[in-house]
Length: 160
Image 1 (cartoon, rainbow, N blue to C red):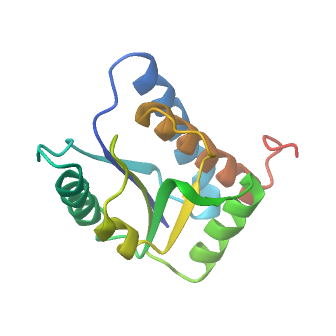
Image 2 (cartoon, rainbow, N blue to C red):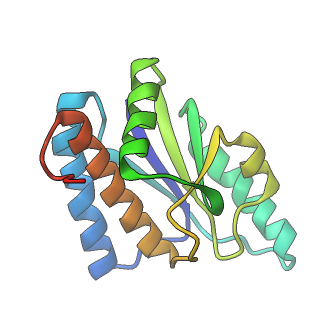
């Protein structure tokens, strides 16, 4: 099953990109045995509209367009449902076992997600109640997807 991370903004070169790449490489290696692809990072530039609402709507529509090949869309949002790593692994296992073509995780811009993205989402999940910088949110999400792959593979990385 294909894993997509669609995000507003671009990862900065240096430590952020290196750490994200490290987890992306690990996902590719660990995911192979459990039917998960490498993570496909798809970035869009921030919206240029003057109003917050118009910017959010524009970004939402472009995020959706970037992941229209994924049958499941997960909105990453501080107001989403907080779940454990084991619960995320069970969600991914279920989608994989049902034959879903791909799962896209949507990370919004500084203003958050627009209504089109909220309506298009299968589920809204949270990495926690605190707002994270978008580069860091991608890294945390990539680590959790690597953790998911290791949980599904029965690898001892996750020790909870």
